[in-house]
Structure formats: structure tokens, C-alpha cells
Image 1 (tube, helix red, strand yellow):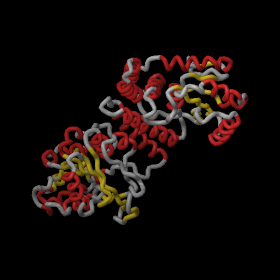
Image 2 (tube, one colour; image 1 turned 90 degrees about the horizontal axis):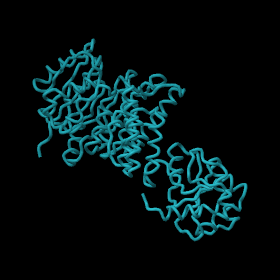
Image 3 (tube, rainbow, N blue to C red; image 1 turned 180 degrees about the horizontal axis):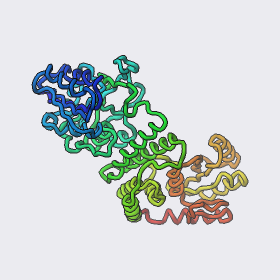
Length: 473
């Protein structure tokens, strides 16, 4: 079987100290020389970057290296420009190499073998060893102890950027969906990984390890303070680009996990900012209008029972304008309706189809209430009694409610569940959606129609039986 041809794409800016090692490490791979072509885009450098590349080109001979000079467009723009060169357009595989990194021998051969064995794979990446400016290894493995993501889970590759640029090789057949990279993307590697996950499998090799150079001028590694916040904002912009374009081609749980990845990074950015009074993403008037329209669509689809389409609409709405309370409320409402197999918190996981909720505070004041509720549903084998103890310490709640159940001689046939907190917005929404009837001294703040005062405990049975008799949605 013939080996695939490889185009090595290098974006270089003010890279004179390191570009020589990077290019030579690509040309020196133990891979047929006629199948490896290096494309270097000098992105407006003012130092001797181009001169170093030209000298190596003369040493290597014709047909092995192309140098392109352009005005400064940034690393992402330079990578996209490299992908337009004829050598890249004709190559079977496209490999990314940063101008300040280097490849160990055998890297291309190892990754090419994965592509040959697995036609479903569109991208192969490797671990990396961190080196300093002088080339000394300061960290033998960047991903040791982690579980590098593989497969086709978009959310896994959207959650964080673990796929290092210089380790990436992609299949040439994905060229049209990967390039050109949108100009507002801050990183080529994160884009390539997330975009590939939408179209093909991604594979990981722990060896050989790419040599990643940390020299104090890197774009993101080691950023702190204001620089870290700036990088986190860029990450949110990338995630938001994908979220605003997602539809029902992604499974329900994947859509949820994609949003959760965005929310986690936003929380991290707020923590880095040190204040909640900061804008993490920019929302235009057009974005706000789009969010409102998508929110209406989400509620229409939810009312019709199409929760998958409702979720896609709600997610895009909240991504278009994360500050829109109505858009986020619609997203929570849809997610609350997804059922126990959905992603995220499940305060009523394992509960029976019908749920009678009681407040732990009420039980503490009147322990006999638990006995009365148990007697009320003793002959109903599809009911769970859920004790809402969010205001209690979890350990204390478990001890007190267990002791109360023993004291009141609650039969083992009664399904008793304990809900402790704190619950986030989604957890609270799912709790409210999962409760059939709540009997409490306090009316829920969301105005839930299924609430009954303690004096009407007996009416809870009628509510449960009424829901049992009602046709399922």
C-alpha cells in the first residue's frame, strides 16, 4: 500500500531563532522525501525568518519547500494561506507545525499508519514534551495523567484545547470543511479539532511526542492575570461560533454538553476577571434579535413535543445572547423536559414516574407528616416521596431524614428520595419539572400550579391519580 503524501503547514512570524529547527525537523522525518513538502508562510516578519527558510530551501533542493511572504494576518490567517498552496491542495495529509516547535523522528510515519488502518479517522494528534528556548526538555509529557479525548464527541473537543497544533495531522479530504479557518478564530488547533469532530473520528497517539517550545512569548500557555482573561475570552468566542450553528445533527446529550462547556469556561473567565461586572462576549443588536426569534421557536417546538429541535433552538438562542434571561430560561425549560437520561444534574434520578415532594423543614417541625404522606401513597407503586432538603447540610439531612423514617416506621416499599443542594438553575428547573405535586407551607417562587398547602395533603393523592390517568405527552 502506497504511503500518503504530506504537506507541512508552518506559519512563521519573527521566528528567526527557531524556524530553522522546525523546518529541518519536518524535512528530516523518516518518511520518503518525495512525499513531504513543507510550506512556510512568513507572516510579515521583520527579522531574518525568510532568509533562514530560503537557505534551507537551497540546501534541500527543488520540490521540498515553498516560502510564501504576506503582510501580517496572524497565525490563523497564515495557516489558512499555507493550505491554499498547490502542494497542500494536492496532499493526502496536512500537518501543522508551529515555527517555534519541532518534530521527533518517526512522527509522520506513526500518524500516517493510523490513517491507513482507520479510514474513519480524520485527525490524529499526539502528546507533547515541553522544551525551553534552548531545546532542553522541561516537561516530558504534557498530557500524562489526563484522558486525551478521542472519537467524534464535539463537546469533548469544544470543552478545552488539548490538541496541540504542532501534533496535528488531518486527512486531505476534509480540506474544504477545515479551510479557510474563520478569521475570528484565535487558534488554528482548537478550530481544527472541534471542526473535525463534526465530520470524522479523532485519534490520539501518546508517542512520539511533539516538541513544544515554551519561551515566554507563546500565545496562551502559562498566561496569567489580564492575559489569561484575554485568552479565556478568545476561547468563549470560539465555542460560541460552534454553538450558534448547532442543530439536530448532534444528539441531545451532545448539545447539552456543548452548552455546559461554554458555561464552565464563562465561569472560569469571571473568576479570572475577579468581578461579575465584565462583558465576556460581545452581543450586537442583530445577535439580540436572533436570540429572541430563536427563543420563540424553542418554546413552540417544546409545546409540540419536539424536544430535540426545541433544544437546538434554545441553545442557539442562549449562545447568540447569553445575557438574555428569557433565552436562558427557555434553555432550562427544554433541558428540564428531557428526562432522566439528559446530561447535567438530575436531582430526581431514579425516581418513580409520579413524585410527591415535601419540604424537609416541614418534616422537622411535624415528623408525623412523613407518616401521613406514606399512608397516602402506600398502595401506589409508581410514586416517590421526595424530601426537599436543599437548605440543609447534605450529611445532616441524610442523618435526620433517615432517623425520621425509622422513627415513623416508614415501610421499605415506600420509595423515599432525598434532594440536597445546592442546585444550580438547571437542577432547580429539573426538580420543578419532575415533581408531580408539592405539599408545603411555602408556595414555590416559580408559581408552580402543582403546589398544595399542608392542610390539603389529602388532595395530593387526587393530583397523583389525575396525572396517572392523564395521557402521556
